[in-house]
View 1 (spheres, rainbow over the protein chains, first blue to last red):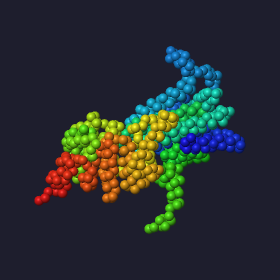
View 2 (cartoon, chains in turn green, yellow):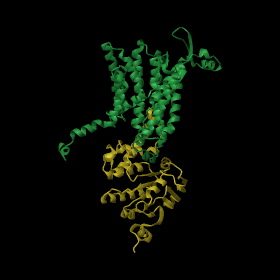
View 3 (cartoon, rainbow over the protein chains, first blue to last red):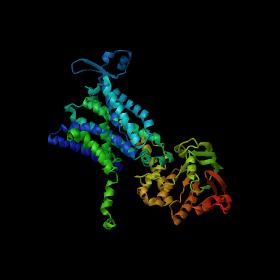
View 4 (cartoon, rainbow over the protein chains, first blue to last red):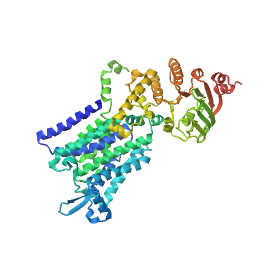
Length: 357
Length: 253
């Protein structure tokens, strides 16, 4: 139908091609990192919407990722057998609980991943609404600092809270059951379906965001980005639009947190760290800011390299340096929109004009 | 019939009384000009009327509704749209997209409908495009529809800004120095355009420095000096008003 879906099909083709390549070369184990990359990409494209299109920075999105991951991890590992009572039996009767046996054969009664996921997303939405209202009144580096603060608060809370595992985080998180017998889990046996599940989710997210940027709301967000006062004078409720897109990007981050935690079987406080937030922003920046495809492709490459350990002990440094270089030399990002047309203009420019004093 | 009524409005910035007890009315269907020497408070008055600044005292009534406590967004939704002295187009958006933003208040699709690309939004999008093209045809900028708006020549950028405002189908259009930076031919065309806009049924209130333009197109002129109204009359009478001549040219001693 629309021209915007052509790259979606091409990207889906690329995902299939990568899987076939790992199959042909017997390197199927790469799919694990590629699956994790997919979930991180979900954070990145959501953040791209916020930074690139609406023009609002957030240095706290690792916080929303961690809220999603920790809530689902805690709820799906919290043994309610030790907390029997009226509320627990009410939960049990409503089908929100599930029994299983732990690693040592003991019996566990925990909340089912689906309601846990719902709770995680709801909490992320609530936090985003509560802090977004006041924080988004700020602009530029004030907004950056305030959102940085949100990230640091979440990090310190998960690091200092006993029942969230403190520095160890939460482990032994069960898989996330889906219809048709599919499970989001890191088991080597289900590596291929999980790879497709994760990237399928990313593609779904991309379609939703691509639709959004080509809609009335997308134009309004670009208008807010470009000239907020003029956007207001056109009847766009700028504060509400900024808040909504902030919450939307927080939902993307929290969903990624939920699914990656179930995939990895656990989550640790480093996922909430400031350097994770910086990494997401760096990827959006190098991807061209207002460029969903740029952010996605850069996320695919850089997260994969990082997770495979190519950056070694310089992992965080690499992303910090990327951010600095982009800000210094290409504030519009590397893969910015209009890049091709700009290059064409440079190439086709009359050389005489160039030599003029 | 009165569309806009400014009643005893004052605004102070620290020690500066920018607007002092100002009152005037704009009749439906009129072209009214607001003139005065530099620093007279004309743009402040525009900012007060359009909801960019809250007045310290006084009231502003638009279409029978008190609007002085409203934001610029709420004022725009009620049918008052402004342009800016320093053109404020949306960068990185084409001329068409800039004008399509002007249709915001006349369309509904929200975040969910946009993300899901619901069929109900298709018709709305088509109407937004059609209406935007109509506006571009009217202003003679349709040839630049796909050009990034801020890369156009100054005079054309001004047309885009007016087009964006017209796409809102306002009841009242506030033009802040529409002829600033235009050459004589362009200024003449701007005068014709403003007359055309009024003939479409849009009431116009403008701030302008170009006296020949003001005198040619306005039905009524308000003169302000140091934030106070010193005259309000028809253009011909304003030209003969001693007080107006005094503030513009100084005393003849």
